[in-house]
Image (cartoon, rainbow, N blue to C red; front, side, top):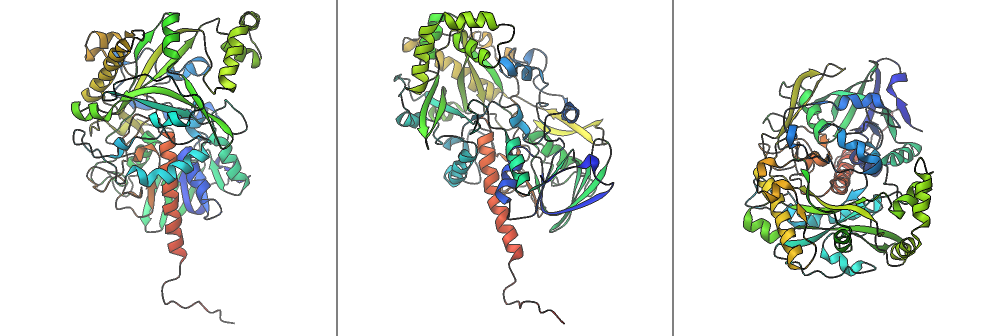
Length: 565
């Protein structure tokens, strides 16, 4: 395998590549995969093949913004079960320095942005993408194939494709619409989210070069086609990489920090002549909108908001059904895009959860879980029929059903990543993060909750218990948490005064230096970012291939060189 470890390499090693990719998460590995066998590619990552605590120390940030104190959502990021520990990681520090990046701890949740997300919306500053959604669709479909997803349909149009059509609810489509999410998983291991570490291993076996435990401390854009990277291992071993093209794929916080810290040639940082690097930081403010606590209420609502499946290329794919604010109400009231999704908290005597624990080896609850399973034959039989025949979600015995929300943010230039006075082990400033949550997104979240509650009541569904701050009409008491989806800090656009990269993801005015990942999103939408950033990475890879082909093409009218004997 072509995986090198900087810690064991000679001092001051010099490496060369056509394309140097910094970061081995979904964005970096997607680009490496697309360029594999077509260019000399070197992928650098500050971690190794597996998760190790040491490199994660470098994720530390100085947080001067949200969430802070009482403004932090009690459920954190909303993870349950074996991933509940992710709720306790400080804001903007939930990153994975290793091959595979964020997919080491994700649950695989994916969705594409709406048509509306790409559009110019006069009520939202800096809205609008440099291209329409239709241009990205071929790349979205390629991304879905890589992520092992079903069709890229996330609205009510999905109903026509499902094996079992959900019971129709006559929501007022002027205010609410259905929204769906699907989940990426490994092809060979159902139920296991797709891990891009496996993509890295496959690429290494086919010859793509990786340099692990390699922290890029500076990018030097020296001249067209000639750039260099300063690289260091945790133990202090140094290396230099010379390359024609650099692609920065380190996430929304780290992409901005590294550009700002690459300041030996310009004190403001690389690509920051207009002071835009790190601005417009957006995440997905998450909180709980409402709850159902009575078993009968939970069942009455859960039957409409669960998993629904279809067969695509011979394999089953399941979609989670939720609700979002309609484009009409967003435009009329000047709101951002946001969507609510169901979260079931399983009861201690839920037979399907008990069966899952037994399948993994039992543990301390093995005897009680076995008794629960043996005492619930009817629920298990009907659930198996629902899952295998009707392609529906499993019926659970739940202690609570809640609806959580993720919202798009109105872009704010003062919500940003800058450099702290605190230094990391390499003597470089850590990131200072000042995340601001504005009134517009809080109003949008409250409006979604109020609209859902009113519609549930009108349709005869159980009435939810609204979050205290929504019920009291007190937005100052709202509490949120980041979802580890930092975006827009190196946003794409045509105006260097409000963007960092152009429509091809190249840093304005810096030939051959590109950025990939959610940091280039012009706006952040409400959907989980992985599918979108993989699609944009494929689009960028196509552009890089064209650029490399142009460089190799002989000049018009030139004659082949002759060897003198």
